[in-house]
Image (tube, rainbow, N blue to C red; front, side, top):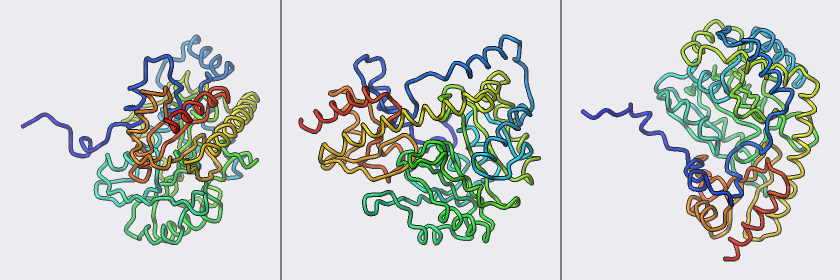
Length: 388
């Protein structure tokens, strides 16, 4: 008998983004836009807070749910930002946003459960319940009148009473699609009526370009007893991708079980890392950091979308959030072959759309969390590819 992993693990796909990135890593001539992170380091005041905690010997275990002062800061932050009644008792700090996703799934999903996922989507989100043996039903967004759109009636028909959980990621990676509040209400009311859990990934909530301070959270429409779990992270808004720090906002009724699941994953997030997160939320420079990030992203987004729209052959639906352009090139149906050719022959690193599921086949994702000058270099290389 061969020594192989269980079928759910063997069935997992390797990261197609990594496949492309690995082909270009080590080359100094690559203009890389494949990963979902910016090209600037975490602000000094956040790094200094963690360094201070580390220097003072904060290297021991802490509570499974996280430092009380950080949980209080998270609750205060999302209460003010979203106008919701959050509290320390509903917050769990996790060792990354992706860890929060897995913990949420471990709390709710059993083998054979039916889980509906709105797609295309970052693969980790859809694969977490599948790794636990759930049956995944993918519900694709569509393009209507040049914009990403969700067919709400068809979605609600898909979310049958037998469904255990619905997973929503908005603003969405990779499309940038955002949910309006009426759609949020309709999804939540439908799930409430049938006792279905909602897992809402709102990591990109601050990265919207309509002039608002944040995308609306689904928690705005939730009642205390609702089966809804919100995932968030420090990674994007505060340039903390490598810190691996996130959080969950959960119904209070489930909280007694949350520390147990965290214990069997990571036990706790490191204390000195949490102190960095505390600085991000409580120091006035935290909001200044987000404002500067959004301003820079808006400039880079304009450069990219304007450049792509002038090239011809490119279809790029409108979207209002996150930090990605998701587009396709007329005549280029094999996104992996296109991405590989762009890296090998033109020094341009983009993520293949099929990395985000079969709905993304033929598409490419460009992360615009980079300076406009770097975006311009990438545009010039893409134009040369189109004229080849």
